[in-house]
Image (cartoon, rainbow, N blue to C red; front, top):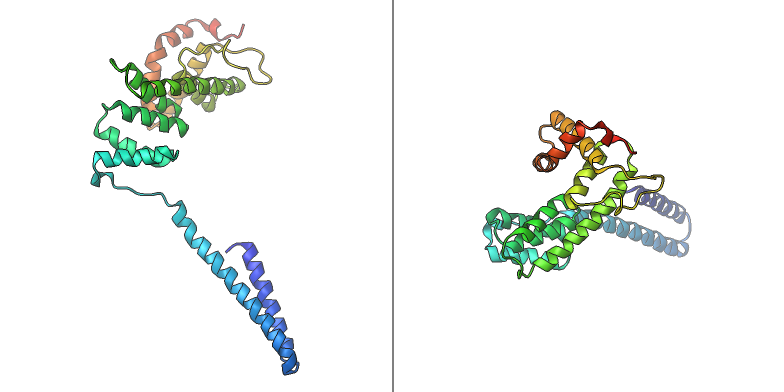
Length: 261
């Protein structure tokens, strides 16, 4: 019961007691309206209390996540369940269903497209682009009905990378936050041109080099892996490292690449 309800109850009960006390010293003809007033106040207090109790008991039920046992369902039912939530943009509810489907069978391109869509809408961009790229890289999928939709999401991934890159430029120091942005930017848009495509944030006059961000991000990731063996992006970090390893090694032998000249 919140502060407002407590104060309301105290004031109402006090006022009702006051009216009842002084009403007892008057004649019966005078007591009748006072008794009616006190009964009205008491009834209002009771109604307010019932409303608050009812609302407090329904809130946990409304916020409680729906628990579904997909093991008891057919594949077609699970896919239909996911589609129903996708149609109303309930991404969080569709996600576990699609995860179950992909655990059961990683081949259907439909699963990858829908999971990529869900992850993108939930802000898990790096994972989203993995599913979308898988769909686009499979041979013989030119006529697949999900290809055009997947391509549209890839364009949205690139737009998001440009947005995140602008935030990346705004962080001067090599922090973990910037390292995470570097990871997302180059995962979403590996061919991004930091100099010509990214809008510089206010106060930043010149974009730093791509290799500068890559090296400092890798140093941050390596430190976090030493401190926390279950570092959130270990598998992604490994793939990321393999992709840019040659450039990073070369940069370590060329300190001049770190200067913004």
